[in-house]
Length: 303
Image: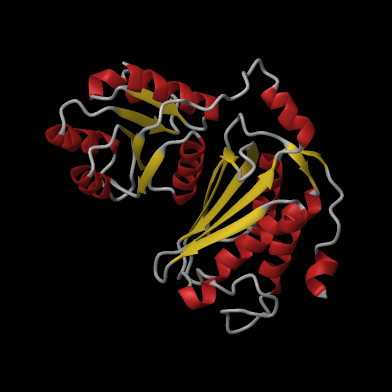
């Protein structure tokens, strides 16, 4: 089958995912009028991958986005370090690659079959590019997710596991073994990114907390009116919606003593540095470790 002949057993080597993305993007978009935004943090973890196969994945997804934007548009590519807690109650480290376009989007019925071989939403083409992509990521012990709505573009999320030797190096930096909190709380989480909501819910549930996760400030306020949570974790920025700064003001109208932690991927944000000035009880910079989450919760709850 073509999917497997093009996505054979990976020949892995230590690699910089950022370099692979930059090289692949420059190659596939050379001479194109498509606008691109590429954001790769300096502290992105390295891992072992088959460089050629991961390059093929990036090019396949970019090509898919280009075909969804025949009149031009924007492709945004970003990466981040991601820690999840699995069913085995252990931490798992991934490098997440997000590829987002401003194209036509995909209907739900097509979205469910997007990685099937020989299925395509295009007038031409077999759809094998995405099937090959799925096969390659699967053989790297990773996974890929897609979110899309007609008229709102498409987002692909690639998750590549950090190899064991590099993971040991990361965890060996004088990091104490995580001990689950004895404090059990009801916690409200607000973040516009589905992957972050899933991550926080997984971490907090593993720490024996009860979690409600919402997408924006309006939903957070409505949820808080129904249930006075022990703790709230708010993302600063919610594109097109009520962010953390507006939300904390509304929550304080309901409960002046609300305990809230502000969260942001911008480590240099003045809100993180002076969180009490903005009405918060604690601050959490992304990406964060499970220990960081546990410690800040215990600190805020016990204060």
